[in-house]
Length: 337
Ligand code: LMR
Image 1 (tube, rainbow, N blue to C red):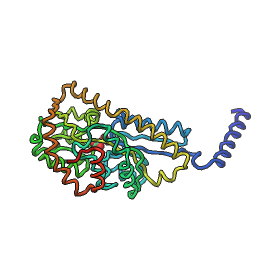
Image 2: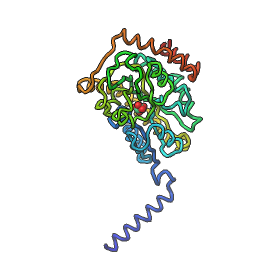
Image 3: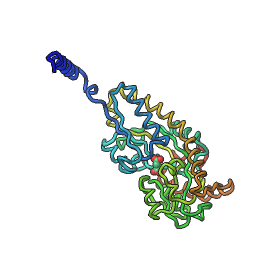
Image 4: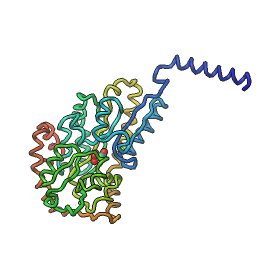
């Protein structure tokens, strides 16, 4: 190496050192956001998490780095909430059903059967005062709620035909961790078996479960259709998410960075919500045309019977969902009987 190139390298190294001494701490190493979630990258949530990463990194000029860990790669359902509270990850987008443990029973209002007529009804609820009030309830657990992400209507799959409520008698059906969902399955004469999404495939394969409920896109992307023979387009419940962060982490961010991240999340949220409905329609079409499962769509009369049979769930849920939340949701959806 020539003398000139050695001295050029020394000048550069000295300049870099001088720069690093002058620059504030954030300029020396990017702020790291680890974003964990439990679904695949080709779902609306998976794509929006990736979009958030891209927007956050480019708009902060590299001052923020976002690492997305999809499909329970890092943590499963419960674990990721513990990890967020401990600060081992900074960002999650769990389903609202899973938030009762950290935000109180009111989050389970979204699990009430046949609550929303359509996606717009869900958005009216979460974009209104009730949506804001609910997110505030997370703060006591050191969590800040930033946005709601949509998914869609759940259907049932099983290892046998599940056309009427009586067909569920005595079956074990996987549900998410929500008392409303436990009550729903009990009312249907079945046992609701709570477990993380990452374990459903194996539990169905081994026969420990007879069936499960989820949105078409999760059924397809988790390959649950390989293990189930029947699907009923019941659209009996709704699955949606909150994007949440560790509150201490978020509050300590430099104000300008936080503003940029809020903007990035707003755009990622619009993107997510624009994808969700179409993705489920497409996934249901694919599940139907694959021929792996027999798909049954109940008639309007049959769905009315489902609805009536599930009314006791609303009564039972009064035990842990506040009257204010129940009446607020009733005003927007008109749904609870
Ligand atoms: C489930 O556990 O079935 C869902 O909450 C997974 C998800 O995040 O869509």
